[in-house]
Length: 581
Ligand code: ADP
Ligand code: MG
Ligand code: ZN
Picture 1 (cartoon, rainbow, N blue to C red):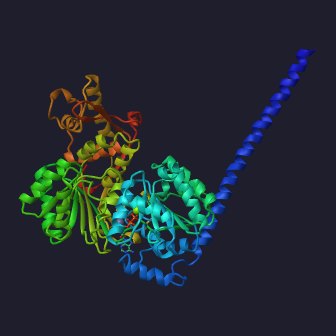
Picture 2: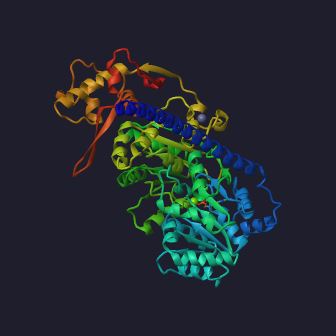
């Protein structure tokens, strides 16, 4: 009797569970739909706001803005979106400004701060960045305060300004860490707010709020309370990172849904992008650089980027031996030497500066006509920034990368500590290896932008002169490479790129060679291009060995190697005709 009732109950419970599962699924779907609709509403709100004409000079403060811009900041004209951003925040709108590095974001809170008087709080992630800004403002005789645990002049200025004892200080810089820690500061800020002296929050590198970004900083979460604590005070978020998901997230976190979003394009139409295969032979490579500097770029000013300090020094010496006037710049030089080099370059005594990427922060030379990368950058973002130092004056400038596969192995041991470092590096290799796409369109995809052929206007090597390309199935060569790799693995030998190439071409150590693998009929350059393509597409992989002397990298089969076993499997490699594979 009981047993049959238990069965009935079990049956009913199962039915209920089924219903619950169904309802839960329905709930999940509804929640998802709701989230999407809410995001749409928010985006719609942002869109409505962006339709208003912010870019005009009919605001009550317009005259004062213009005169302060020229007289105090010594700048003649606004750049794209600067005036809109300033008008919006001065109208009390929460605003997010997306602009590439060097675009001029700081002006969009500095100028309102000076014109509105009162207090503008600038939140910045690093003390070094804050010090840089304060240094720049000092040169313009604009006093600014900063809050750290030190007791510097700027710190005293900041507290005095908060206490209402120094009306000339309108800008106070602070890190989120300090803000979160200092109850004293938050209490004072509350007072300033009550006295109606608080005008604006500017949050630099605002993408640090979002857990989506690679730069997430937990202390930025604290900023989520600003809107509730200081209602009516506009928030200006500034960033060079522009994906929609991050911007949604940032607005959510700061509680400024549907704020005005101003997005400047990342396209630099006056930069000509070019990639060249770097000669394997050092002398030939030097010759190439010398020719560029003596002919195409003669009388022009530029930067040559290298990866290591040693490279920067040897290259400087070699170029000087050839009669060129160049300076050297890297982090190991004394500050005094560095500033001497910099000045000689700025004033034109040096045609070029040979530098590691330590050379970057605060370069303020508008007429840089060329940026040559003697070695690839570590990521497309880095490349964009480094090459972007050319042509700040809006006139035509050229950006050239010299690339070769061997350089990848130098860089990969440097970036492997970073989770996405290798992926970013391979994307740069992909950019270099590409034989026909518009370089600009390749850069655009990194910033979630879409630039058409017209946006390039023949300002890249591929658009200027379309190269003839062919597609070759390189799967057979891939199989040959695997034979060499497998043989090495059997004897527990590590194959560097050089050893692998030697073995393929029947050179070097005899025991690495495989008799059934024929010597390629194409150049070593073509072989390198094939290996590079296999590497970025997962058919080959770098293996890292770290010992006391060096970090070494070897080539092994990649995650997709099993696919190639099938003899019908093709790997199509599109390359320009000069490679002759
Ligand atoms: P971001 O923060 O966007 O990277 P910055 O605010 O540091 O850029 O500005 C970069 C440089 O551009 C600074 O030297 C600044 O003085 C200059 N700058 C900003 N706006 C203008 C402008 N409208 N005209 C000329 N130079 C400007
Ligand atoms: Mg900035
Ligand atoms: Zn192009």
